[in-house]
Image (cartoon, rainbow, N blue to C red; front, side, top):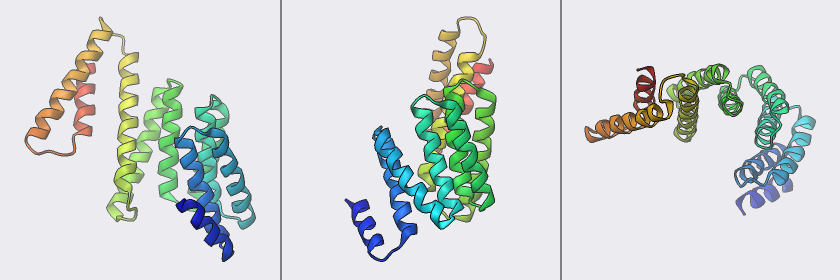
Length: 209
């Protein structure tokens, strides 16, 4: 309802930039609801608007969403192309937030393909960019974005554990998760709130053993 109201107001005053952004936000909403066809329709409308405006930042966002859609509908090669275009546009218009988000989405694509090394490289770049943005306090919901990145790190760590050739691997993985849980409980008991990186470190340490 809010998107509809914003869309109508923006059209009334001929604010095409906002119209394009509303369509981008709708695409994100439909993607989260796994309504991929409606998400694609929103992307197509936004792409047309931003192309007419010559907005590299807007087009970068749309290429990012196209990449996510192709990734989640089983077309990884096309997804790589779209995310690559998003990264190129993000760098050309100096949009570090878009670059960080695109790297995070590309990491998920690499993880889905069980490509650990490039996934970790993308995560490293995304983490660096998010950290720099956090230091500048420019993005209000940066914490939510960082939490999503931390979950992706955990997925990569799980992939690393799955690929580690050790005896009784399944038993080792379960033990590693338990070590991570205990480390987090101990940290929380002494008032340490930021436990996600400790959880990852504990899990990796156990895999290393």
